[in-house]
Picture (cartoon, rainbow over the protein chains, first blue to last red):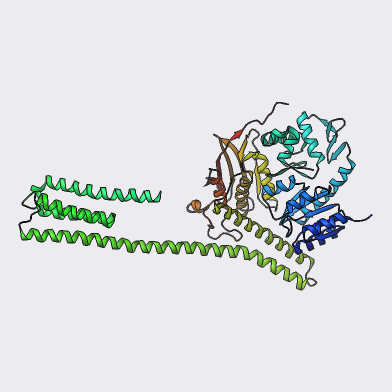
Length: 226
Length: 359
């Protein structure tokens, strides 16, 4: 089986080197680009399974590059940047980033995100009607949810919310995105509904709602489902 | 604003000088027959002397002239004229005037010297603060950097000679140093955000219980020996707060407790809603703070004497700054049974829609 290909777009040689070593030792094939344009060319010629993108590039604004890439590239993009404000993160996610990790980062954390992003490509291709996450099983045809093999009762909104999160396993969904998808675009600033429903949902599907394993809070940004 | 204040102050000085001169004159005039008009001159000198201690030179000189005129007109015979008959009285009058003026000028000079000394002291204080800052910063930033460089060198030069155990220990040290360096830089950036005055709150509805569990996970992640307890209150409303800043506030206090309490301590967090205030308390059962240090703890670059290395004295002043940016306040007290309690009180909009109807 051929190795999974990953493209790194980062102008910092040290980071490129480090990522290359870390990824290759985890059996990935690595492409490297120091500028945005170079990255686009490589991505077009050898479409990788995942792009790791820095936002501070010398030739083009990373957010703009993200938008350009998203016009034709539909697999996962992880943004890896020193920019750590909530606005930067939300903008990148709105522009189509699958995930966002701030520098300095822990390599183990990056590897987990890389695996999750690649898995996401594959589940998206399969497009199955049943999603299984650990002890949780969602059947989107039967509209049923099982926890530890037992059916649990969710309200319509709770069910819709859980489906949206589960269909995007591993991806951070911003507050605004979730509100728009579940309640409609008039509710995009009504985060109080989201807070309450997430708390209710956690009580029903988490073993310990205070230490959630499925619905994780990305503070100031949104939620991530595993 | 400042101009208005000086103006008010000046106006007060003139009125007070003139009024006190007039008051003393009236009193002296009433009792003149018991004390004699020459003693009146001495009493008036006392008034000018006292005014000179507190007031500026111009009002004092004016009151000296006023005293002289009043004394001449109302007390020196012939009364109700400025004419002076007696040579002795002419001398008295002139001496009175000279003593009053010299007095005013001397006090003025003393005050000027005092002001110069005070200014110098203030300047020295700010230089001292700046030096403390530089010392603290260069120490706190360079120590982890020194560790990182030393570990890198050791590993590079002696990799084969080191046992695996030693190699792992060195790497662990390097990891700790990097995390510490990263935290110090974070603190400095937060401090400069506060100092720049451009800190803008991004308030949104906030599930404080979720937030606190998240912070505990983050701060406690490095496996501290202490026990951290948070009993979430189920009925806590949502608060409208800047969640990023609140997280930083709780993180910094918790991190501080984890750094400085003994290994067997219990740290207890609580979040409540009291009269539209969001109240967060973080208490420990450690040794507490020395009573006379309590009020200094939130000062910038302040560190308790004889504490272990690893802090810049910025963490708690950021707590204070971020809390005040929310219009709130932070309290620190020692608990009678031992340990210390930080209480953060922030006025905030609340929302009780915890239990929604099922659609």
